[in-house]
Length: 265
Image 1: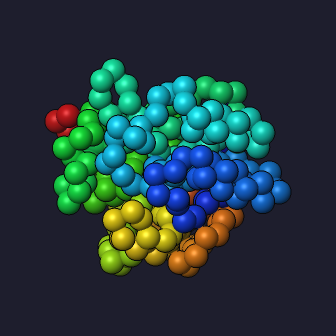
Image 2: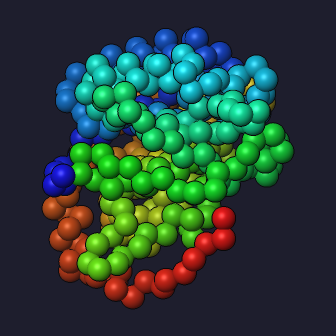
Image 3: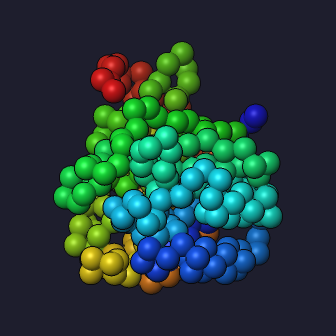
């Protein structure tokens, strides 16, 4: 599939603490405000519960209500939907990113880097591999929140004249106290990988009292922010230019000089 400009919507929202029913209803209202055609909708990390380690109460299965919600949004809006959910599977728990396509087919990625300052790394299993997805001809690498701090995991590749991916996507629950780090790393990931970068954060305080300042943004391959949210609920609409990406990569082909390495998983 040839790559065309990509129309995206980032839904930055407060999240009702550990209440999937309220959150699905709220995000449904937010989705219904999208009137123009869109190729990709991105939701925050654990959009249905907020970032929690309360696995027994909050985890769902891959046939649960939240998956069905994503399937319905993708079908009705005829677009791809990305967000993460706390999932129970085969006796374990995962912070699982789901990339849902309009036909109901989906691909998943389990968050690899589990947040050590919370209980996440104690109760949730980390992923062992990356997942590339094709969204209207764009090769996308979706990762989750804390993964943003680990540049080796997101490093783009250039081989035989082709880049591994064109777009990095980060759903997150990133605290307001580390907003500067959030912004700095999203820009850095765009520059070092010559790719578009999307970061979607939440607003409001979680059940632990931790405030989240939003700051969802879209960064172009040169590291320039082309759209950025404030600290309130809002939808960000943006168009990712394929021409801009290709021209920049062709005129500044640093991919030829990237180091090659392997990662132990």
